[in-house]
Figure 1 (cartoon, rainbow, N blue to C red):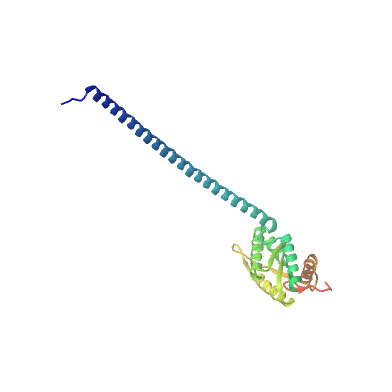
Figure 2: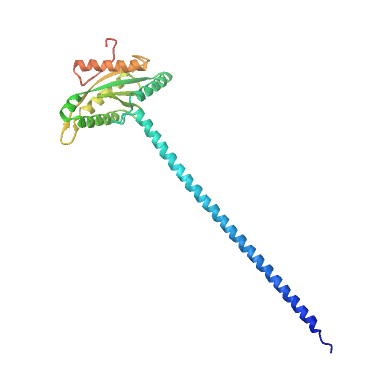
Length: 245
């Protein structure tokens, strides 16, 4: 029987081993590449997630800062248009609302009323109980005025112990008289302070648009003049503007 050549066997074995080694190295290289790709992909995903988180954090920060700035702007605008003590609209804002209401009344052929209010007895409160008590009284008066009118109306502070009311969309001048009586009744009630009681009243002058004037400043002036007539004739009442005033 013929025997295999040992030299050929040895050569085949080396070739086979080399083939196995190359195959093993190739598999290791593929595995390394796959691992490297997976690692790089994981890192890329993590970077994307971190970027998303950073963007979300930045967005949240911007939203917060915008909100804070908006609140600050609104506060500044409110302070510029409202009385610091009572929180009521001030004279410029009142005049703006009055002129807006006049334009609407002209369009709808409606009426509106301006009530000028001056407190009676407020100086005595300041003199006898002090300015702190006076401030509390003014704040309470402002509260009662707001409660005496509709949400569509405006109660404002002109300064000192003077207030002014805008009544929108009234049917007749008698409606303004009804509100004036309501205000007088509300302000007659004693105001409780710290262990003390303050009492004030009010003199109210009324001007009607368009009956008395189409001009906003004249309406305010006419209501103011009617109020002073009440002051001279006994206080704690109301009167409408007349040509005699």
